[in-house]
Image (tube, rainbow, N blue to C red; front, side, top):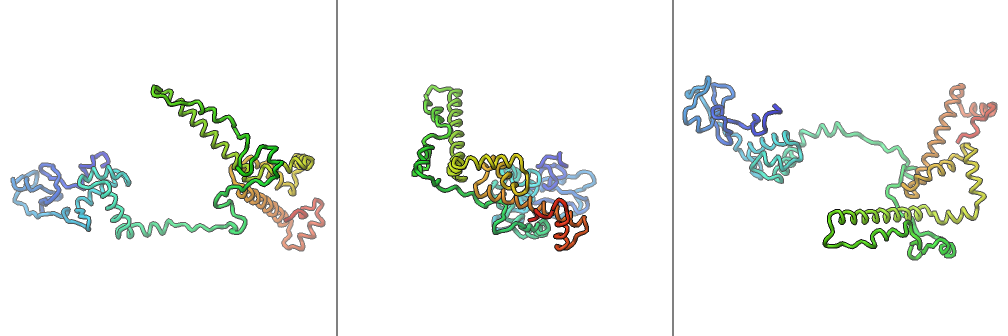
Length: 332
């Protein structure tokens, strides 16, 4: 059936004798099964196979019935359904070509209003939609432990003393820097001139230069956003004031992997990924990972208690005192 052309599908009645399509009134033989004949062949007394021109017959004109206020005939609706099935939902231009009497907009409006949003659509799809609905329960804490911020927020102004701002070439009133990232980026396009005798290759090459310049501007804006959002300039001056403390933290991270330093260690390890978050998002992300780490440690401790037959809080305290490694001393 799939190899039969759409115009020859059985949904469109054809004359059994001359094989022409019957778009209006037709004659149906009451003695021969599935035998329809057009008015012209009937008037000529056509006979074929077991059919004789003296058989009982009746007139059939159901496809000319008009439905709705938009004046769609039954045959047009049949053609519409067959065209949607054959051409696919949404290909309204091709569907209109198959119907031949309606435009693409008319076909789309009729199908959606009658077979999707109308009575037929509601009865057909209501049970299916209800059965496919899945109730999703939000298990996160709505107050402070959400996975990420709902909307990214840009950082505020950088608050530093004027003397420090002058050292790094930062202009607070303009919120800008004297020396930008890729400070000579404008030189890529500053010499470009569009000439009337430019070839396609020349034009393409100049457009490539413009694209390179736009990418540099985007990267410049991204870096400025990260600097403002994470307040990197004040953090830079704070690290300069306390260099010994910074070295001590790095030395601890390299040698000490205790739970107390997990949060600090995690912050240093994931610092490179902060460019993909806002400051608030990154802070919440780290807090969630630290909380997960604590829960995993606590689950491991409770599992150890249960493996040793301990079921009460009092027994846990006694077990921790008698345990040589003091496993319970780090419980949160």
